[in-house]
Amino acid sequence: MRQTFLLLALVALLAACSTTKQVRSSQKGLKGNWTLSSITTDQGNKVEIKELFNQASPDCFEGSEWSFVSNNNSGTYSFMDVACVNSTHSIKWFMEEDGQDIYFLWKFIPDGVKPKDVTAGYKLKLISESQTEFVLAQDASFEGDIISIYYQFVKN
Image (tube, rainbow, N blue to C red; front, side, top):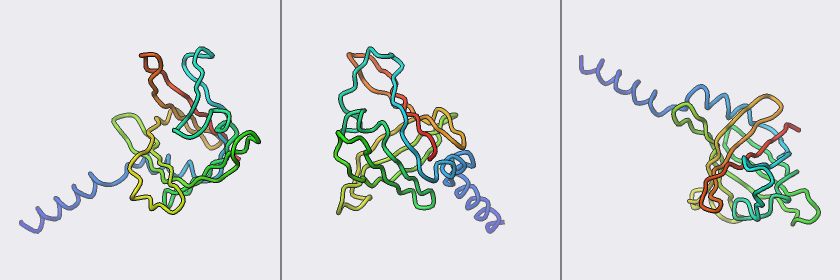
């Protein structure tokens, strides 16, 4: 009886801690090389974004090349615009489910720093996903209101 209880408890624990089938599918779907093709807001042209992810202007991010490795949740992105510093940046990323929503969480990993030592990152909601494109949304504060910033990626 005790062994049965322990076995059931172990199965329940593993089920609770495991990644859901939907999240695993989304993570595998992002594997590969992508281009961040457009950045828009739900406010149209009324909002001028000066800097994204505490790093660069939207102009630098639009057209940037992203690579996602799903088996170790690492990746890179590179700015392609000639007006931006052309460099490659390392990231760690994963996806998590919260109710009916799936979120893409990522953090920038500076050269020489271990991912476990980086505590700040970004959380974006997965809006849509197909084999050729996906869209992420980020809530941001703007003039006392919350707006959504949309990032559309296309597969290379």
